[in-house]
Amino acid sequence: MARGKIQIKRIENTTKKANELTVLCDAKVSIIMFSSTGKLHKIEQSTKQFFDQYQMTLGVDIWNSHYENMQEKLKKLKEVNRNLRKEFRMGDCLNELGMEDLRLLKEGMDKAAKVVRERKVRLIICSSFCF
Image (cartoon, helix red, strand yellow):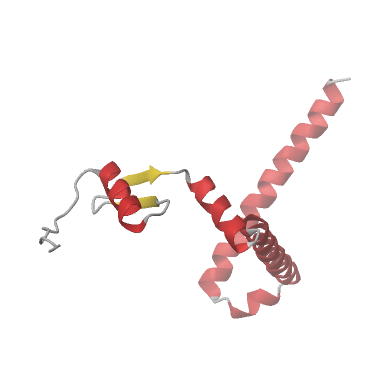
């Protein structure tokens, strides 16, 4: 039995694309596509179902490992943030600043101090008249 030639052409119907792949590969197919215009096409089973089946097949928990990785990154970022705040409070980071940067920093600090003073005055006045 001779095989006939088939014409390979672009499949325009997005649902048909998944069905064609399912038939050709004899497998479940989940497709997430972005067109050249940025439009999202999601076909067949849900993404969660897809990853759940992937986890069952491999015997891994990708959600938990992803969560643990994110927690570890968060812990590192918090440590960096804490160190930067400490460095800034101690003034160590000011050694690298030039005159203009120092002037701008002083102006910012003056504005912040003014806001603190105004808030303090409002609280004092409110506590005097609220009783």
